[in-house]
Image (cartoon, rainbow, N blue to C red; front, side, top):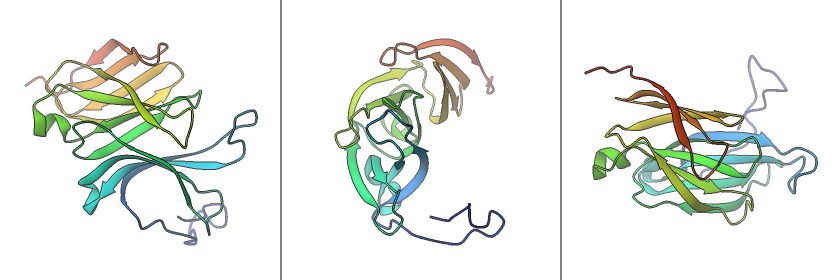
Amino acid sequence: IYDLNADPVNPPYVATWPTKYVHDAQIVTYPAGTPWAGREIAFLCGGYNGGWGTTGLTILDVTDKSNLVVLGEEEHSNNHYSHQGWLTDDFQYFYLNDELDEQNTGNPTTTRIFDVSDLENPFVAGTCTTGLASVDHNLYIRGDTMYQANYRSGMRVFDISDRLNPVEVAWFDTYPG
């Protein structure tokens, strides 16, 4: 962890969490009116042994850099390499892509939907898929829209206004082959 507020050009190192390999993370400060108001919460995608073992979602309270606290952890089915994910604007769900599950199992592109309304007890509440044989990579959420980049099926856009039943509404295939 580096403190960008102290010096954004040369940020000082302030802490580390060496327990698991973290491939990607999203850190948010919870707003007023939420149970974790003012707390800095990190949603970590990773696992043990370089991310290959016991891979999934780990949630940390990183508010106090000298006392990083694991709030919750959850693996998902067919976990191979927890790659990246994003929190919904309402702080209720975290959508996660496992980069190697499709490649290793032959299953279609699958995004896991974690219910994180209780940070200490996250669980997989559902999945969504394009139905295609493509490896999912990164996704980002803005409002009720999820934008997902996939290796061989390009950009996929989902309406997630019904958080547990995303509907693909647009796509742009960047890999015509």
